[in-house]
Image 1 (tube, rainbow, N blue to C red):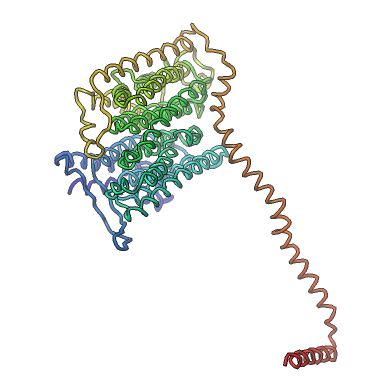
Image 2 (tube, helix red, strand yellow; image 1 turned 30 degrees about the horizontal axis):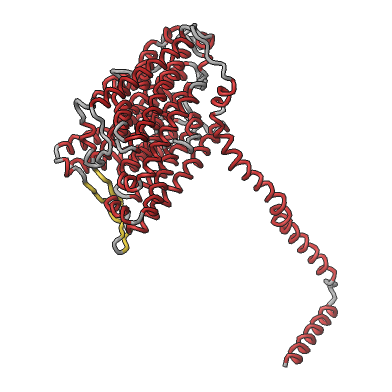
Length: 628
């Protein structure tokens, strides 16, 4: 079938690009490496579009195809092979990953121009896109796990891309270790799942419901651990802000199209398990609500432009967790789509600013860039309005639909709606604080120093993707406008039937409240940072706590890092040095002293050696005689 063949092309094109760049080495130019990587991801997107069009021509009940290239492991009823699953959910994710990914990789040609390690960078980027596509297209749980691990490896390589900086290496290790914890719970859940079903196929998931509530809850909890770590939700969220050490396009790819969306996809793909463990599914929604609130508060005091956007990602992924945790699967996935548009836009627009200011990321050293970078300003403004959820921009249609659907889930849903509305106010406040600090106010001395008065904002390879994402952030939300038209929900319904659906009055109430609070947050930011009519509150203790990210890093340092360092040092002092190193020294000294003693009996006289030989034989004779 056309959709199956096109899906294989989508999966393998980025991998082919990564292999070509790696094998080409210095034989290809650095710019050519960027072209190869961009071509590979663009071909993947074109093939995904073909697969999407083809599958639309099929009956909704028949839009699921499992294609196996070969089976490499089989034992009785158990078999595992290289297979892809082509259904509405996988095609939806293929379009997001390859589409937004190709724009980000193409943007990188201009952003990374002149870097000595461009070839390595583009090979890593193509590998990252392939890894995420393997995760969403994998036709069985084993391939899902393989893609899951490759995404973590790719993020480690890209976050630590500038390996000459200790901070980048520390951030890469932090991301890898934090995600490894989630990977471990995910793998253990899969082992338990395989033990009870005897299969790694998605079709065997329905059998888990009969395995007993304890087993079902354990499997769901393990899967949730993996989702929470990959999507940077509480309490495994601390790696994401530090991941800003990677180049800005890497941040855009991680936050918009790949890694952090994996947890949302996992819950939707394995929704039958979570529905059987409803307590764990509710817990996922609660974690999402807590994360969106905590991330929004911390973002209020950040001074690094990329970190503000990073915390906004945590917050928006929190909304998605609320949606899929309450069973509004299509609503959560729709927000994943629109979020990919405006979050990639914000990161890439920030990259234009950082590129123009020679790497400067501190918003306190910016200001007045609106007149110097008008195109970037308007694109950034569009992304900001979409993030807050102001109509008619994309975020309004998707985020408000999650809040509306939550009202259909009783008391828990109502509580989470209140938290979500508070998050909307915070989003308006921190987003427009960022915009006013960067673009409004007087012209900064730093901008003058870098001669930005000529209006040159960056090469077309950077500006064209930013413009395309700005357009998508304006029109992308109109794909679905509940309750009038719901093509996204209709498309995804055969894969994950919703548990929560909003009525008309719920849509109206959620939208009015969310827009009002979002505008209130924007007004507060304007009054403090642009009009200068209000002063920011001097809540010193609260501000210090937020600047310390609510002490999560210190907590982990006290619980895990410091005890590990103490144990390592104690082991070095009391065991390794005296026992391991000491025994090695003792063996050497003993051998040397034995050699010295042996050298004293080496007289060089034949009669002495003959006497020693005779004495030895006499002793042996006496021993054997006495034994008999």
